[in-house]
Image 1: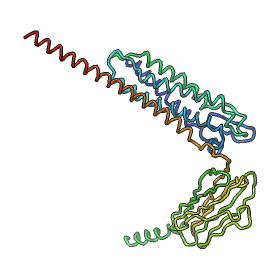
Image 2 (image 1 turned 135 degrees about the vertical axis):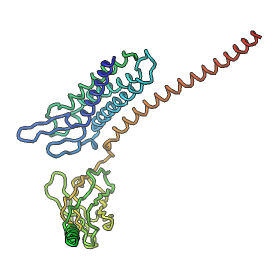
Image 3 (image 1 turned 90 degrees about the horizontal axis):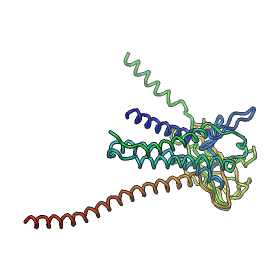
Image 4 (image 1 turned 90 degrees about the vertical axis):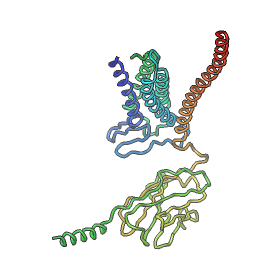
Length: 165
Length: 200
C-alpha cells in the first residue's frame, strides 16, 4: 500500500516537474543555421547569445501564442493544485471512497496541456517571424507532449484508486 | 597603532566615493501608439551620486531598417533643445523633470514614418559611464492586442470558473443537507412526540 502511494506521488511530481520545465524553458523551437548561433525560441523569449522577447504583442496571430502561454500556465497550476488536493483528500476521505476531486483537476490539467501542444503544432507558423520559420521542435515541446499522457494516466489512476487504511 | 588604523580607514572612506559607478538608464522596451496620437517616451536613470546641475539627457532616433541615427533632443545646463530641422521638427516636447532624474519626451501627431528605435542617453557628471537604453516605437492604425492580455484573460476566466464550480458544489451540498436535516427534524419531532404519547 505504501509502495503504491509513493509511486503515485512520485509520478504526479514528475508530471508537475515536466510541466514546469516545458513552460519555463524557452526551447519549443530550435533554429540552427549553418554558420550562425543556434536560436532557441518560444514561449517567452527567443535566445541565441542574447534573449529577445517573442514578438507576441502586435499581430492578430499573437492571440495563438498567448493562448498557448495561458494553457501551459493553467496546466502547471492545476497540476500543483491537484497535488495539494490529493494530500488533503488523503487525510480527509472516508475509507473506500475515490479521489474524485483530485482526478478531475488532474484530468483538466491534461486537457490544458493537450490544447497547448496541439495549438502550437497547428499554428506556430502564424506567429513565427520570418527568420524563425525553418527549424525543428525543441526539448520543451517534447516535454510538453510527454507530460500530456503522464497527467492523463495520473488522473485516471486517481479515478480508480480507493482509500484504504 | 589605533591612530594609524583610524587614519587608514578615513583615507579609504575618502577614496572610495571618488570611484564612479556606472549609471543605469531605463526606458521602456516597446511603445505602441495610434496613428495621429501623442506618445510619451520615458527615460530615467539610476546613479549612486546625487543629481548634479550638469545632468544631460539626449534622445536619438533611428528609423526602422536604417543604420543611421539622428539626434532629436538634448537637455543640458538647465535648457532643453528640441529638433527644429529634422523629421520631428515642432513635434517634440520635453515633459521630464531633470531634478527627479526624468528625461521623458512627448512626440506629437505620429505618422507611420515614425516607426523606429529611440535611444536615450543620460549623463550625471561625474557619473558618465553607462549604456544608452532604447525603446522601440510602433505606430498602428488600430490598437493591437497587448502582450499578455489574452493570456491573463484565459487564466483568470478558467480559474475563476473552477473556483465558482467548487463553491457552488459545496454550497449545494450544504443547503441540501440543511433542508434534509430540517425535514427529518420535523418528522423526527413528530415521531418522538407520537412515541412519548404512545408510551404514556
